[in-house]
Length: 247
Image (cartoon, rainbow, N blue to C red; front, side):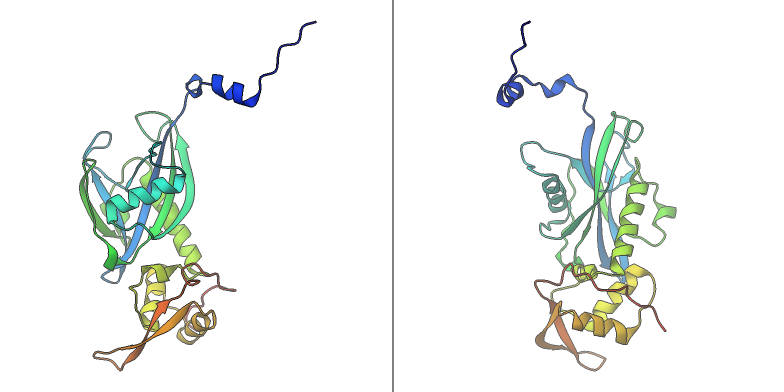
């Protein structure tokens, strides 16, 4: 009885044709958050091309096999194209897929959220975007009917952000290079949508050693306040328990 000669892996891969199997469309979509005018805002683009032309959507796009070595590279590239920022906080949230979500065919998208300080933003539009705007999360669902399943994607990203803010230092990524403790607390409260207990919050932040004094003071109509900056360990610190509300 003759046995079929077993191929080596290199021989198998040489003969393998990935196009023998149908493949879905694969994209990355992003909820890019910042704080502007004391509100948490997200970046939306008005699509300039079919499908869903003239409808609002989250920024994103297809993986570029020549440019992107990893999935995160696609997210960073798209973020840089839209905001001019290439080193923000990025987090993968969830994968969405199905045959109905995009009329072009069976599709998969990997959702990320990004946090960037408003002072670093240079919003850009390209041939795929008619408009690019910042929109407050408060009331967004009533004013904007997002294309595809982007409403579900945005909800998932927002819920992940709100959950993590209760026990991490993520909001520091939304602050300018120098800030006061009041500024930091306010950012937390804006995202959470509620006030936090001042003394407990400050003690927790200072005890965690995630920020350091700049040696300068903020002056103005109120009494001078110390200015701080985030240290190397501060951008994604996990607290031992959730942030407390007012007592």
